[in-house]
Image (cartoon, rainbow, N blue to C red; front, top):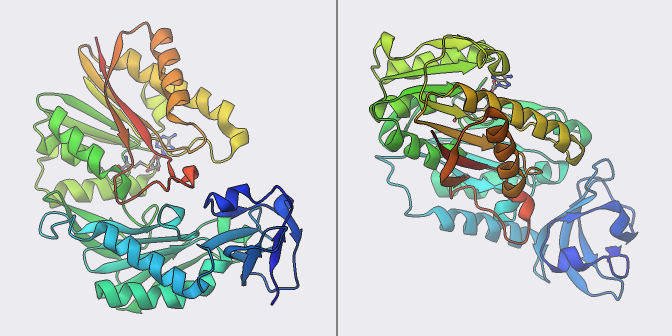
Length: 388
Ligand code: SAH
């Protein structure tokens, strides 16, 4: 039977259950169709597991199973394990939106599945996973019985895989907007035009923190997207929560979420603006600033420029926050790890000439698990700083 054979000494990553196989590690590549699942063997012929392969991708192979098991059975098992991990941890009356599958974090490269109330949203990043989609749909729909399934595979990365971007209904009715509840707070989620699959589920635990620390404060939610941090701040007793985002559509969603929560029109101002410029506005009077920018480093080669960007906004925020105040600052670039991010914030504090203490450290919510064998799945980190 045809198989991919790794070079001698290049099998360590796969033996360590890392999912990615780069072309440099491959000795023999048989004839195959892009997207096909093939056995992976070491130079001595030992079967290490199965991966799907795509010559067009910068990551040639992605392991879907380790060991001798039949790959499709193993994919089913990974889906079952992902569901089992989250079972019983959410009371749907309190929180009915969660990530069901977090790609390599759940041993399923190329697949994200989120559940918004009774609507399942799939995001498929690779050709190999595209071919597994019927199986994925079969297992997930049987388990969660959604009213509808929506695809949000509108990812530029699919080009590299030789795939078109794809989004729209996959099963059931067409659903563009769904109302979720998170920790008792309702939000609208835009499934057709919103960012990611519609909502930043990974920030759930940080939203709880904002609710806890916001009482009596004037909050600036920078990079607000649909205003979730602003709503949580007000629910936590903030005097005001202003939201700023470069996207007018995001600000529209934020206004919708204020209305949904019955928040008074004077409870926050909405700005469609660039945060880098907005933080230079002279009139700012906030004593709690939240910075949750998009990933500034999408590749390893972006890290230096990204750190400059993180330092700039953190310096500005540290200068502008009223003392004694709070700064909740995040980076969601995997390539900027927590140590490096702390160093960047240290430099920003030094340049701003402010005293800053870390009260808490933050990570992605637990339904976005980090696969210990695949550390690239850790991406979100944040610090809550006390500034005086
Ligand atoms: N905090 C949000 C998620 C933020 S995602 C939440 O919890 O839901 C990052 C946001 O930054 C996006 O909404 C994007 O539109 C916005 N953005 C990107 N660059 C920006 C810039 N330079 N200025 C303002 N907003 C920006």
